[in-house]
Length: 270
Image 1 (cartoon, rainbow, N blue to C red):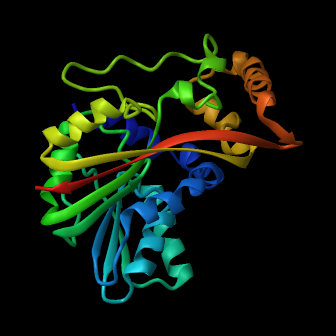
Image 2 (image 1 turned 90 degrees about the horizontal axis):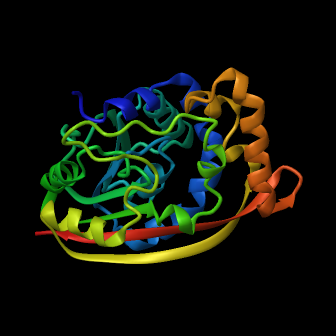
Image 3 (image 1 turned 60 degrees about the vertical axis):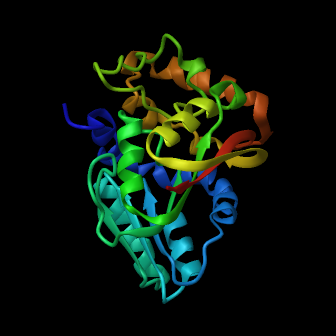
């Protein structure tokens, strides 16, 4: 079986990727926390794993300056295209993007001094193998910092529970594979063990809880509901369920105030 096959298909679906810029209203709130943890210095070489639309990668490139470089990798061709366009529009020329699955592939530009990821490392179906490969792309004294969500029960905005019975459950992972998804690294002790098994040391985790105003459709819209498997005859019920679920966070029409519970992991290469 191809590594990360289901996620590779999902993130190369043009319909799914088309809504990503709206979704960034959620993830952009976390970027300052990740950049602070990274403590990037001018001249450093940075790899962004699962870079998505490239906003954090571009921000990192601007910090390391013309003497440094930033490389964004993702297995989504449409998102890499989006990131490349954004970098060109911003006039940032020390950043590049490549299509690669860092679970087993090698992005060009290494070895790197820093690896970063903003919600891009939660979709590996073999996490120890993936972080071992990431470790191999770091210099001996390199470091990693990434953002991932805390447990789903710390993030009550997640609409998955509201869709129970309206969308099919995620398929069971194949033999030898691990579950993937936004909360798979929520157990910080398990994540620590994954990093240590992959060769990282000095693992540090810092939990954060913030509140941010987010447009309703940054979380879910009809296109996303279709993509996760809601059938046409249940679409109205699913839309109503999502609307009812989000009412508890209503700030004003079209906008919700969400409690976002995430965590930043940092570690060093041995």
